[in-house]
Amino acid sequence: MDADFYRQKNDEFYQQYQAKTLDIFAYQAFVLAPLTTLPLSERSRLHDKFMATVIMPLRQDKAGQLIAQHQADGDTLLVITATNRFIAEPIVKMMGIPHLLATDPEVIGDTSKSTLTATFTGKIAGTPCFQEGKITRLKQWLAEQQDQHQHVFTHTTFYSDSINDAPLLEYVDTAIAVDPDEKLSLLAEEKQWPIISLKTNT
Image 1: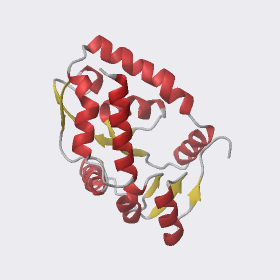
Image 2 (image 1 turned 30 degrees about the horizontal axis):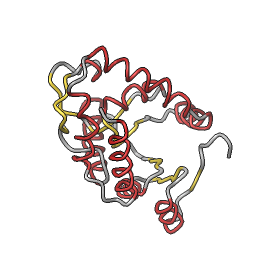
Image 3 (image 1 turned 180 degrees about the horizontal axis):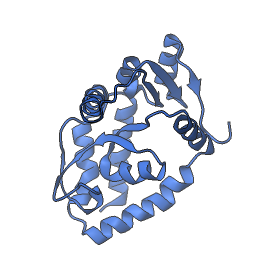
Image 4 (image 1 turned 90 degrees about the horizontal axis):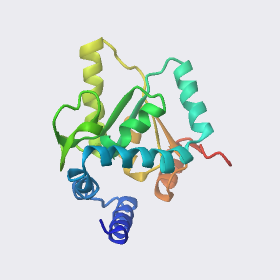
């Protein structure tokens, strides 16, 4: 893998993400491509390294406190993210959040316990968890919770830092912008949504 090429392409995709022009299918194909050829042992090693060197240093005390407060209040916690499940699942488990909606990679094999042991095709399965797709996936999940557990949610709150989440922020009962990008900050001010920071030094 050419690291410089990968970094350049990733930067291009990020610019598209910020501009709300990202093709989620093209992006996920790019992200998942290396996983289609790596052996399981190497994939697991790289994921462990990613968690240790990238994710763990990003942990914020304020975020942990917010999660703990919602847990103490008896709220049902769900992460809904455009990131693919292979990357997101271990992070969400580390955070102690029981439910996850992510962009699901198409796989071959048993993924009932974890996507870490799956064989990836490089494609997306089902509806990407991105922009309006997050609403679609959330509605499906809420319906499943009602059908399987007779659990009806009376109030929904969503936290986001990205303008790409504007559709879901407008859909839920309470929208909260967290360290938002410039476009989301302007929208939050227009909609009079709360704006908070979870950065440790603020």
